[in-house]
Image 1 (cartoon, rainbow, N blue to C red):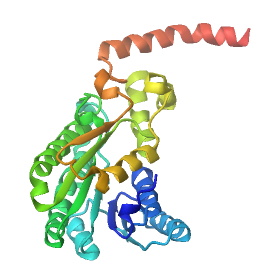
Image 2 (image 1 turned 180 degrees about the vertical axis):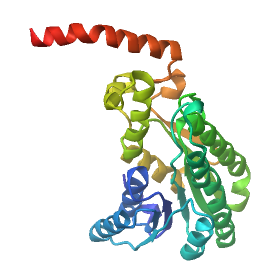
Image 3 (image 1 turned 45 degrees about the vertical axis):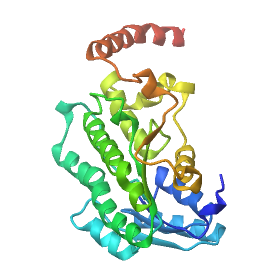
Length: 288
C-alpha cells in the first residue's frame, strides 16, 4: 500500500525493532514519511534503519532505550520534538491466568503500554496541538474487547487503552488531532509465539504444541504484521480524516465470535485427558 498524501510527514513509532512496529516503519517509509524509531534493541533498530534508508529516500532516526524505565517517555519526546503521526506500539504485558502472574512483570508491562501510551501521548499531543494537528494511532489488542481469563493482565491493560483512546479521541478533533486505535488479534510475531507457548502450557501442558492452536483461528492462520501496519497507514492518512475516538478490530472475526482458544478449565482438563488417553494408541499405530 502506498499513500502519497503522507509524503514528507514525520512519524514516531515505538516498539519499532520487530513485529508490527517494524512493519509499520517500512510501510510509512514506502509512503515517503520520515521516521523516528524507538525500542530497547538498539542493534535491531540499526538494522532497520539501514534497510529503510537503502530502499527509500527518507530520514530515519533511531532511539535505543528502555521505554518502560522511569522518565523514558519524557526523554524520548524531548529528543524527537514535534511529529505529525505517533504510533504507540511498544508493549509486553505478560500472559497467563491470575494465579500465574508475576506482578513485577505486570507493573513493568503496564508502565510500558498503558501508562507509557498515556504519557507519550500527553507530550506529543501538546506539540501536535501547537503545530496545528496530527494523528495518534494506538496499537492495542482484541483481548481488550474479547476478555480472556488466561490473558487477564493483557485483557485489563488493553481495555484501559481502548477507553483512553475513545475518551481522548472523542474530543481531539477540536484540536485538529485524531486519536484512533487498532485491535489486532493473533499476529505472526515473536511476541505472539511467546503468548501462544504460554497458552499451550495452559491447554496441553506443553509449550512445544503451540502451533496446534492455529487450527482454531479464522482461516487457520494468524494475521500478518503487514496487514496491521497497512491499517495503521490508512488510519493515519487523509482518507481517514473523519475517523477518531474509535478502535478498529483486525482479527478475522475472532472478537465477533466471542471466543478463540478461550476455554474453560474443565474443557482444558478434558482435552488433556483425551490427549493422554489417545497418545499410546497413536504411538502404537505409528510403529506398527
